[in-house]
Amino acid sequence: MIAHLPMYDVPANRAAHRRLWQALQDHLPDAPNFTQPSADLMVDWLSPELYLSQTCGLPYRAALHGQVQLIATPDNQIPKLPARLLLLGAAGSPGRGSRPCGQ
Image 1 (cartoon, helix red, strand yellow):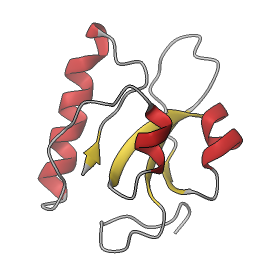
Image 2: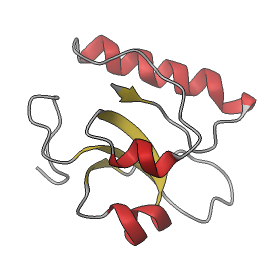
Image 3: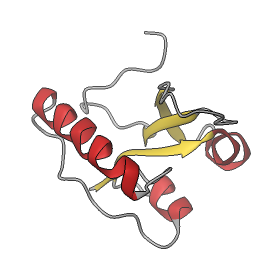
Image 4: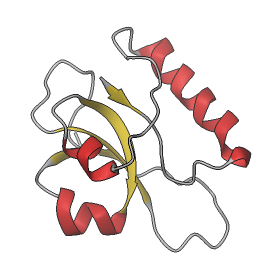
């Protein structure tokens, strides 16, 4: 399974990313362990093995919309961030504890 949060994955954010992932695993027993992104994020995002990942709006609008399930648009409270970050799951992946946005 692919499970990572690659956007803004810099040393200052890594501890927060790990805490978020631990909270997810605490609430979803089938959540996989955190994985490292591949060299090609688009391949990860479009993989049927995708459990959860993160992108920003441009890749989502340009290539991922309709190909993945948008799960959330969290406010990461990053000052001067010009774009929203999006959490994604594989399209059509029932039984992973997520519902389409707004439901």
